[in-house]
Amino acid sequence: MLTLEALTVRAGDFALSADLSLDAPGRVAVIGPSGAGKSTLLDAVAGFRTPASGRVLWNGLDITGLPPGKRPVATLFQDNNLFPHLSLDENLALAIRPRGGRLDKSEAQRRDAALSRVGLGGFGQRRPGEVSGGQQSRAALARVILQNRPVMLLDEPFAALGPALKAEMLSEVRRVADEMGALALIVTHDPGDARRFAERTVVVAEGRAAPARPTEELFADPPPALRDYLGT
Ligand SMILES: Nc1ncnc2c1ncn2[C@@H]1O[C@H](COP(=O)(O)OP(=O)(O)OP(=O)(O)O)[C@@H](O)[C@H]1O
Image 1 (spheres, rainbow, N blue to C red):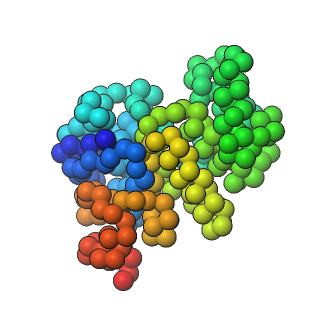
Image 2: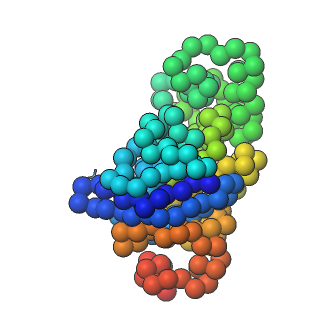
């Protein structure tokens, strides 16, 4: 379980509060107006932003002071964050050996298995610029698989892809998250994405991340802040 306990996170003049828990495994959407603090929330979970007050707990353990690499968290960024000068194989090797170095045979097999799992078997020698945007997203997902952390954070990960490819990638992430037994949090602007992907949804608005509610129930009877955002 991920718990944000009486949390306040600041970014310049902006402040976001959160006091909520999310069960793991589970798939959760984070939705709300632009600038409401969705990325700020994920940054606090990932450790990229230090809270002004409150705590972040994973299964009861206080991880507030841990740096990003030591947290039980893997992040899939919108721009994929693949190194352009390295092959997909080399990019993925860094998920296994962050300080570099040659993979041994079983590590190389794990890497190849992750690439195959996302449909990129045989693409390992190519650099990110030599594959399509969708394939880059798949490679980034393979990296998250290899990182094998129980919390997956996805900040509008497939916004650059067309609707069909985005839907395909979301179901891919869904499959991976379920197989890993992970808690997956996805920031999205699209209520359709939230409904397709997430069992529960957190609304971020007016300086607060609200406790998660079942996605269908939330959209059937949206609170005023969500109604304003949806324009319904
Ligand atoms: N480094 C910073 N300095 C000052 N203000 C910041 C900084 N980073 C973010 N903010 C402000 O914090 C608020 C929340 O930003 P955040 O990126 O978390 O919103 P968001 O909900 O993810 O937005 P979007 O949907 O547009 O990506 C915004 O008002 C933003 O202007």
